[in-house]
Length: 127
Image 1 (cartoon, one colour):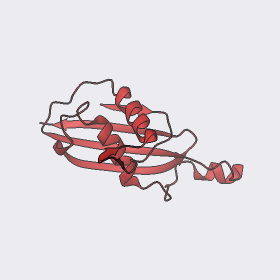
Image 2 (cartoon, rainbow, N blue to C red):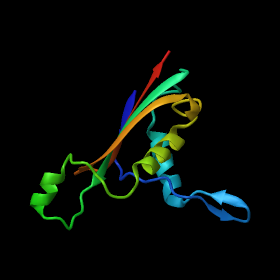
Image 3 (cartoon, rainbow, N blue to C red):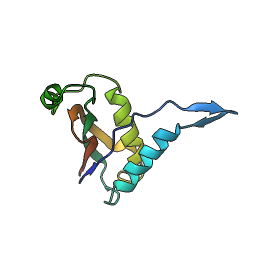
């Protein structure tokens, strides 16, 4: 089962603590809700889950047209960190796509430049 969400990928933000309570940043909460709401499949009933993700990052508008064209599909090696992007998606889908993220046995993820910022997620269960 796979989905594509056309929005600029947002990394998992560090929680802030107010009065002894952890609060997730607003930008992260909105992004996680968008991801969660985009999952149209049900819960994957498997004890072994494999996840693949591709994050398409925006190309800086300040780059020349030639440089922008050359970057499409190239690896994105700047911030945000890949692990924080993955964490935001997994947290959003925890309990919605899979019962708990502890059932995930394999994750592959990559960041690349593209004209339309998005995240593609594929989740499969092995019995």
